[in-house]
Length: 452
Image (cartoon, rainbow, N blue to C red):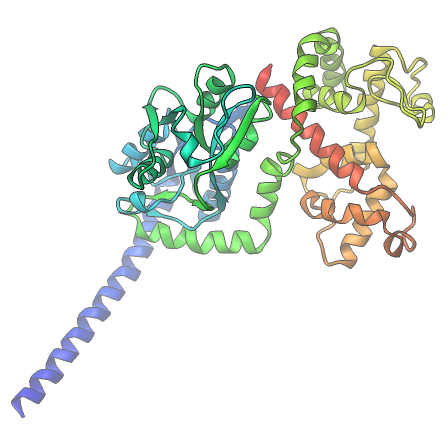
């Protein structure tokens, strides 16, 4: 009888302890986030790079920057960014508890999970071996031993190379803390380094700047990118997890990926190699005209220059089979409406094209997302605003958001199919063309801003 009472007492005691712990965690969770809100900020560690955080004209930008800003806004606090020089420094700073979270395109690995708490995955990548066209390009792990690699210290690349070496592969690599992956890719392009290892998203961005870079082969299956969260702020982990699920479900994560990566897949080695050459040889003749037209029409001159390259490859005498001519490829009708007397005159063509793009921007429906308005105007420059309106009509029928470029670009190609265009006001259009047109302009624009 005494033993039975003792067991009942012990069970009740355990229940009370467990309940107390649960209540404490709930209270602690609330208090921890409340303290962060009282401070009014969340401290974020990152690094300066095109995929993370950079200054675009006057404002900060970058995929990680925008993602963090969205989360901070959800919490009702400001994001305070601490910019460190390398992944190694970010890792060490998080070990020392110097940030609430680290957002720096960080790969989730088994080794890192021993030391850190990661948030949910927001993107998947692969580690790729990258070399330079014209040099020795290994096509297997066995051949990889014939080159010496340079990779950043304390990186997921080092972890993977060590794994491969323990499997009996004869691999050679050096590590550095003096630079980052983007600069190592440039060193490979400059023939200062034989090969390196980099994440596929970093490679995709940087191949546009250094078109002779070649992806040899991947050395991992897909891996997740996620934020590292300070393990003293477990409630922050739950908050990030809940928010990201909702952010993705609303389609906001897809929109953000489209903004930074949607045009990156447009890679044509020959085209980009020619583009780099024309930036040196042709652009200097017309840059001042693009700058003047951009300033007068409140459009970034780099956008106008990128659009002109897509139209004419900066050839003032360019002519298409349909009769459009000049640097901005204006039709006779459009040129006349803009009072452009000579389409082959560079100054008139550029100013006319800028005025036309500004007019199209004003005609973009007010409900279109502010960040997407330029894309709609560029697409209309290519295919006409009437077809853009038709695509919006079709988007509504498909239950898509007609005011999001990320969703509209999926609909535009349908304008070439009779079962769809026959019931639309403006009829048939080669809907793939404006999608490719916008992607290429954004691609050229990004390269232009990086190189100049």
